[in-house]
Image (cartoon, rainbow, N blue to C red):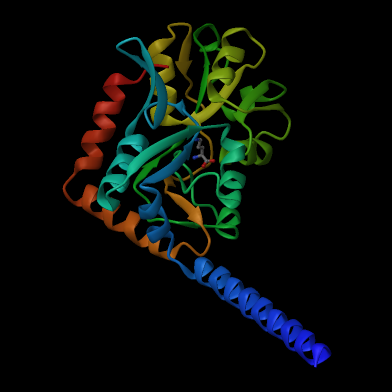
Length: 272
Ligand code: ARG
């Protein structure tokens, strides 16, 4: 009798345990299936990852004595957050760490003047393109007469942002130059001023912003063989609902010409 009872109790416990673990499993599955937007809304915030060294896209600015990250990517991100009805949290990091941060869930999306290349598309999803620009080469004003063509960059030190399309471009088109990849564009500009590099490749609006702040620097006449490159927002693969919502926001901003105005405003305020 005693034996039967304890057997019964054990089998009951086992059944309960199995039921528990099964429900835990299915809950686990459910939470994977929960939409990204739902989980963002639940948290009440969306986290943007950016590399705030790229005026007028994103840069640091002292506003009423407080270090603030501004730029037209940030304004677009604010609109994305507003349309979702949540707060925006900004995480500033090196450009080459952004996609890994997306993968680990440290950030929800990337807005950093990022070009939707085929290589990147293998790992992340991109929104539609919201802005396009061409690549150009910044040099020291004193070298203006000496550096006018790709040829003149032979055996020179070329600064590029690590992990950016400019790094690849330099490797392809300036194979006889010494390529120096650095994490932050602000450090590239410093290296140019201190003669650690002789030229820096960035997108035109960024080049203009830095040149405007540095009388010792200028835009070179060097023509790189590139077409216009677009910028798009990146999200983790699988977050289709979030890309959809971001695309709706971007379409609205393009249609009512808000993006043009945001770029113009950011250009006016661009400093680093
Ligand atoms: N468009 C280039 C790329 O996607 C450079 C972007 C750099 N952005 C930045 N915030 N520093 O690789």
